[in-house]
Image (cartoon, rainbow, N blue to C red; front, side, top):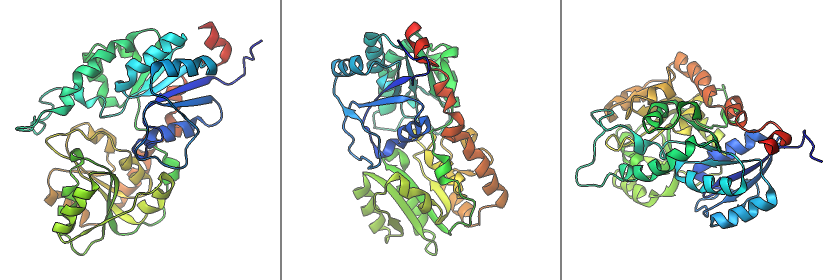
Length: 364
């Protein structure tokens, strides 16, 4: 006899759990609370794991995941990224349960239209890695139209791109980033330093942050890097006289007080690649009362930042912006704008797709 009030069982199929650069998965799981019975499968080892995470099982193949699922008996499967749709769909089909997907930025930006903006162009003499992966994504997209897929959550700017690729409009749920806004929300006064944070990759163009710091010797610049190319960036910093302080690798729970030390967040990006998405750091900074100043690489960023920050086209423009205090009306607007990314406000966009009780799940 099945209890209609028993918890829905959700099988998470993700990669690289618990990865420091993927704390949106951590935030999403936290927002689910104890209302669901969750099991997490990590299909690839994390190379920058964070410490405070839920239990998970490391597996390597669909066969192993199916075997695990046969024991766990999920009512629904949830995954992240279009790169993982084929695996999630196969596991769901073999277990006979529906699934949902949350997309992000790097797994959709390969589908961006050519000529989206004059400054977005193929780099001379370099392969266009993003568009090279577009075919891989396109192979998976038809699966989203199957009845077994209950829906895909994605940033609003992605909707027309996905529809153009043949994804049914009714399958797409617009959703802002998954941010633990409540951990960062703090209206108390901020410090006067300037920060940048994120995974150190070429698309983030963090060399520009160092150049900016070198041009403003009277200000404190702090970078919170997440591994990978940090050593090369440290060499660039030394060549400029070390104007930027590099923080040690911090746990997610350690970041909110770090934001409060700063007046501005300057989020750099490579204008030619234009492949930085909607960084969680933007909403985190807004919630912490930090002014936001981001590279103006695509028109959709205006929707994310709203009237609660600035987009810059040159380092000189960024310097002029952050040379002044954050306007109070911009700071206040930031607190409001950040709530659009508050996972506690929009977790229902995901959970409303799932069966509401175990009897419904089995009947489906």
